[in-house]
View: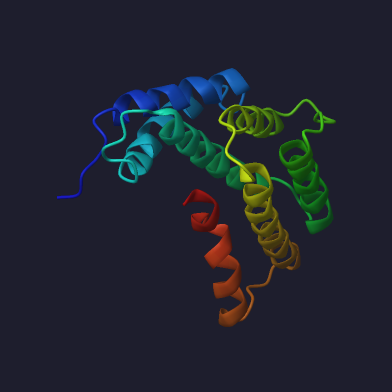
Length: 171
């Protein structure tokens, strides 16, 4: 049996409170959907023995933000709009730019950036930004195919999905 951090429930509840505070989840239905996802339990398996919950909480909050962003992108029609939106989010995270729109996802990116900077891990923002940029480029590729209502050939689809599933940014 795989170990799970004993604080998984607490970390998961904190990510729900964080998502509410950012405005990412607004309705009780969204809150319950997030609660039932048990994202905190997934990430708690990566940090089974950690007693300092700073890194696990950041990882859970990122995973929550990633999942909500993925849902949001499916509501944006067109690769051009998706690209503009994602490039704005990248500037918020990578460069510390103030979001141009009132947007809960952008608030989440700004908050995660500030919390990562507080930890003073050398080169964390540039390295993670590069992973996010790679993810966003793959999201844009998905949006192009979605706009055309076509499914790419398997080798292309596999390349895109290896990135958009989120493992490179998650781990």
